[in-house]
Image (cartoon, rainbow, N blue to C red; front, side, top):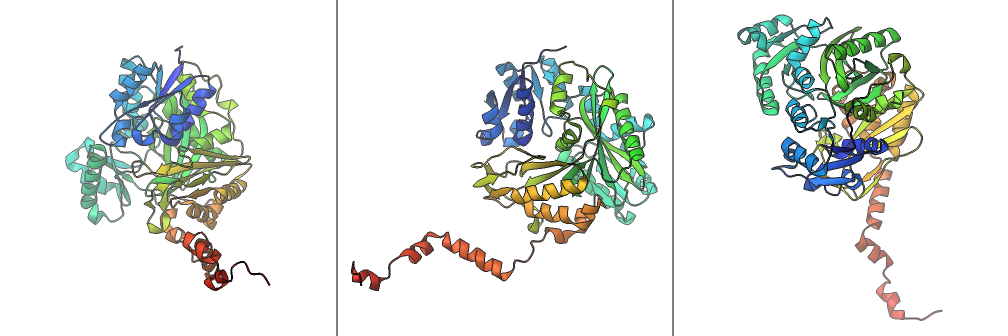
Length: 491
């Protein structure tokens, strides 16, 4: 057992606030590091202590592992929770924490290294007898990579070996442009990850993206907490997540979840992780494993009642899970939507601005995880996510209705958001029917367009705007010169 009394959170925004909530609930102290642009954010205000970190850019500050470890030592933190993104899947940082005598709240460095390289992870999974898609790996023989990729057949998905988050991926349906797409993929891999190595795998048309939450305690115990459906994506970036998947039956669910748990057991996994799969026509293939907490973890928490951050803290302290697979069950249905500062009608361009008003929805089964608040601002320094809206209901239809009602009640003024787009997406007949796949959003560009506004509504809006204008109000309330000349005369 390891004593943890103070946890430093090496992250920002909504995940820093989320981690703090569980840290405080566990009776521990929470320290937050922050760049100057985040000095007035909720995470900094709620922390027991805050340390400013610097960098050439705000992002660079959160990637400075040495500076973060120094902050942990200076504040007496026993452990560091990396959240997601930034240093969360950096094996070197995890190892540096261990060398500094600080607990890294995550898997072992060697596990991060194994699963962080897509080629190594794929080879490991295949060698253990788990399903992987037909593929060609450049590292096996660089000179024949193009030939072997061509032999796999179209359509192909070209992916950076060191990649993640959908960066650098290329879909190739016409093999006559294969070499050109490989070169583009190589350049993007080098730009995003400093590593141009690639691999190609059979692309499943109109696939579903299913991921399974796993937990391991370092004492040989591994469980899964069922699956999440993450098929509603735009350019490989998730937009809506739900649990459980609306497409899996009991037999398929048991199969895919046990494969995920089996992969975690084979890797000797410790902590919370996610095994991702491509699913189509009754078959599924290993995609990758994320060795961290996921953005969409709340939907799993809602259907299982398990606080995943609390479990990470317990496991990091050396405790056993204290339960087995049979004690876990699915309760109802949960949906998460990511509320972004972006303009869907302008190709989802990020927007910025002050949060003049921000009134989140509430009520039973409605949860909002956010790292900003009214009076703050959305800047270009980071990802433009304002909040995650999570709803939980007895079934999927009720969850969709609850999500729509909550979005309708979510008031954000000061910058353009995707709230109206999310409502149109959730109301789409295919989405309502659960007939979703990773290309669905791309097939429905009309959902991004702003609907035409009726003329009577335009007039009402213009009237309201005019009456909010000081010159118009002054003119409306002014006494005409003729009447003013009468003075105080009364008839």
